[in-house]
Length: 204
Length: 204
DNA sequence: CGCCGCGCCTGACATTTGTCATGCACCGGT
DNA sequence: ACCGGTGCATGACAAATGTCAGGCGCGGCG
Image 1: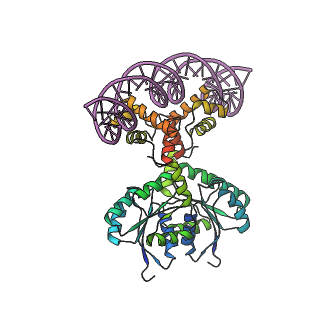
Image 2 (image 1 turned 60 degrees about the vertical axis):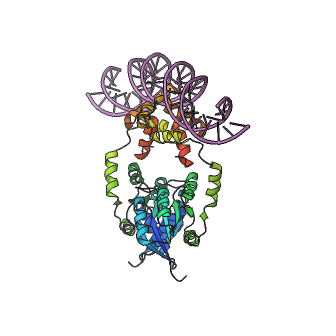
Image 3 (image 1 turned 135 degrees about the vertical axis):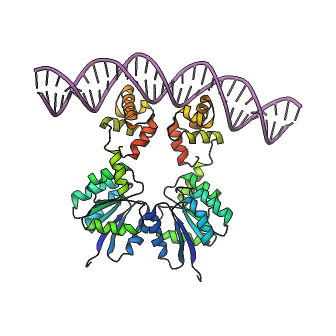
């Protein structure tokens, strides 16, 4: 371990960010070179500091961790990305890997394993939470068509059909139909439940 | 600072818990005497270790941080409680203070201030996020009657009226009426939206 | 005491939502 | 070129949801 592994830390919760920094700072072979709190600052920081590994939270203001991952992979392929997230929505994992992430850790994992995950990712290995991987497999790809997804997304906040229709320039009947299809496919019996299920599976 | 401040740490996310532990462990005048990951273990741990300050997350499996606070205050009044939470739902603060918490910190606050917050709480002061306090004041007390709250809570998961009615042994008309009242009072135009608004204000 | 206000409950009625059958356009395989 | 499958769009109909007016019991107050 001649030179330490250079780390970038991105999490919108300052307290968590600082705490992770303290935790990883205890490891002699890790060095934190940047800490940021918004997704749209990730690329800039990566360009400037060229870290070996970027630790990104999924939920961030500005730009979510998945999109940030895509940017980083495209612009600075030497930097590997390790996603850290609060809750293990099955679909997050799939999307993260598709975006080019090398690892995916939920915040439920013991603190002692985080440093190891960083080292593995740095070594070129993939790190994935096994339980979450299983969930992801059963969740499968989104069964929703693009349009259905769009309509469901627009209905997320509880807007009336008429409002959604206006937003998407559709007739009310069409909106209802897409919603109905989504309800059927998600196994829900209700648009609210359909939204919840889809969100949990990362289909929105 | 003859004897260090003895701390208990409760957060369901192991990674965050460990990270906070590392962060606070750096302070010479703080000593972490217990770390737990579930709300229903808090009281037991407090009884055993008698910490000066208990750092509790609001969202935890088993028993939420608010209820845990009540227990601790009732059983071990010498232990002061500092609530730490992910998202600053206005109503959480009110409920936390009512339950007897001495402080309330959101995870957005800078890491450097956490240790200070702990010290202040230990000194008998109250620590409250100022921005959140303002939000809480505008949110005000819940306008919902007990029954309305109960019905809205039962409808949270998108259950049909008939199901809710059965669950609470009410007629469907009654359920609809309570729901309607809640919708009106929350300014929503929809039960889904009413649920969201109420949750954000901590009225559920 | 009698009155008023409030919370709770209920059924009737209007509105919104969910389901279904149908038509159209596009794509890939034969 | 034809055909079957799929996604998108739409209106008619059925079911669930939201609104309203009204009844009942209780506690506070003149």
